[in-house]
Length: 255
Image (cartoon, rainbow, N blue to C red; front, side):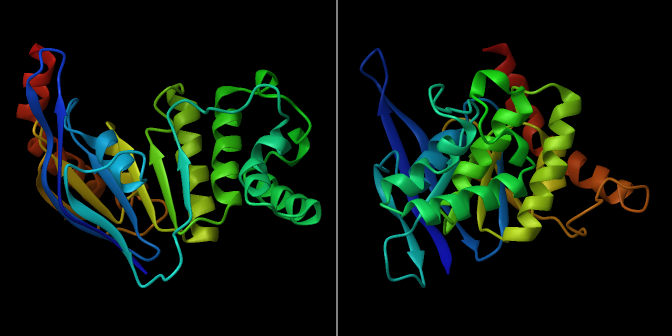
C-alpha cells in the first residue's frame, strides 16, 4: 500500500475576498511502514496538507489516493489538542471509534485494553481526562487513533503544547509504539530536531504558497539517533533543514 499525493493545489478566499494559494503543486508519496514528517515555517500549509490527506479538506485540484488497497482506507488522527471527550473515561475515549464502527463489547474490551497497555495507561482506564497530565492525555489520544487499526496515522503537532521534558519522553514513546505497529505515518511539526528524530523522510515546505523545497532521507537508525554515536550526522541533518527554512522563517517572524 502507498499513499499518493499528486499535483495538489489548495486555494482559499481570504477576509478581503482575495484568492490565496495555500499549497501549490504538491507531489509525494508515503510508502507502507514509512514515517514521513512535514516541516516548514509558519504559514507554509503543513496542517492544511495533512487535513487534505486526511479527507478533512478537499484540494482545489489534484488527488490523494491509496494505491494497493481496495476498500476505503481507515485513518487515525491525533491533533495538537487532544480532543478527548471529558465525560468519557480513558477507556471509553479509546474505544469510541470502535463503537462507531459497531464493534462488539468483547472486541472493544480486547482492543481497547491492548492499546491502553501499549501506551502505558492500563492503570488509568477508568480515569477521566481532567485527571490526566498533558502527556497522558496525548497518549490516550494516540491509543484512540491506534485502536481503529488505521491504514495511515496522521499527527498534527501532537506534542507542541507539552513542556520540553515531557515532549522528549513522548517522542521516545512514539518511536517505541511505531516500532510495534509499523504504521504508515504523516507527522506535522515546527520542530526541526523532532523531525530528524522521528522521520524516515522529511519534506521541507516553503512558506505561502506552500511548495516542496526538498525531500530529505534520514539515513540513521530508527532509535537512539541523538546518541553520541550518531549525534554529528543528526546535527548535520538538522542544520541542512534549518538552512532551507531560515529565510522563510525570518520573513514569517517579521509578519
